[in-house]
Image 1: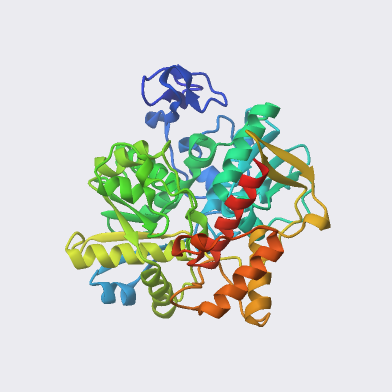
Image 2: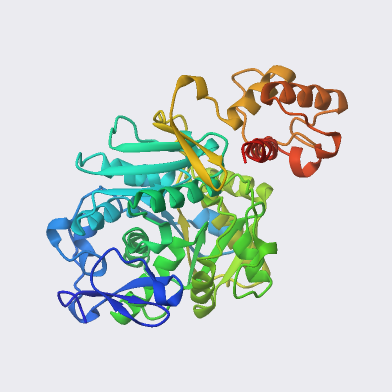
Length: 493
């Protein structure tokens, strides 16, 4: 049954319908996705107004009074003639999401989930993030003093949460933890407290807004889109685009479905690994327990729960999945800026890598209409808040203690300090997790390596056995931080 003759919630597996509510998964189907569908006979797309007003009939809200204008959307879509010439693609288009308020496409899932929460009577919720979605959502939550957002964030991602001066944004910092562990801690806290958890791709309020980038692009590009390419983590944006394209196809606004392409970085590509193995699910050998990468927004090493849905929509459209190497990403980012004037992040650069590879292989034809979702840019130097709490692993659960200056240094910051001190690196030189310590970049010789290890032992109060000094543990600064996080957690277990 349609709610208000507009929408309905139903399990993708068994088809069971649910009343309009904060129902994300179907218990009888072992947690299958509960999705929202719309009565296309009642859909009218408006030509004016804010994003939610224009596409209200295809968004999960019942009341127009629930609309929140976050000033997101209406971003440019440019015909990339110079880049297209280089790649051999005559009809290459870039949807420039760097023009959103927080410089990423995640602004499309900023105001909408808050609007859905409020319509459903929810004023407090839990989430975790590598920075982009939490910044987008937190910016909107800050407008509403009656709301509280509990955000769990890993060690190296705190500086990517760029919302300050918002007392109703409560930050839980895993000073020795990764994004994966922050996600687990958030789920544990939700179970302990009973506070609703946003759950990323499983919350229709978050995923539905991302399809609006495709909606806009169909109006901006003079021909129907043949291929849509996006860098992915959970691939929430690709799933949302699939749904949006299906809806526009049903409305007669496009003549065919675009082929969907997911791109992942070589150091964090569990979906591509599973895809290349023609696996229906993510198997243990595909999972990356401690993901690393240049693309900070896509470091999800275990997408087991979402991969079957993404695989299905990519297969359904005749799409594919592609891996981008770090060298390819660096070059692509440079090309985006030099040829098209877009200062984009590495996640965005991955789409250029994929287009180049697929064009070279013949999978893309020169006159295909190709849309790259340039999902965002870095917020370099943007202010970030001080955490409210510090979270650390404790047995089967987590300890949560008030933040104080005495515990202000996370694992990664401590590694940075040791590197600067032992290698005499000046403060003006920027350090990053992907800087190599062995074989390239800093290329430590045996003497420097020994000094570095001794300094780490002193700083962390741990003995580092010679057999632990391997490429797996010491290849990059990020590898060292991950190794030490594991050691610290094993000590506290």
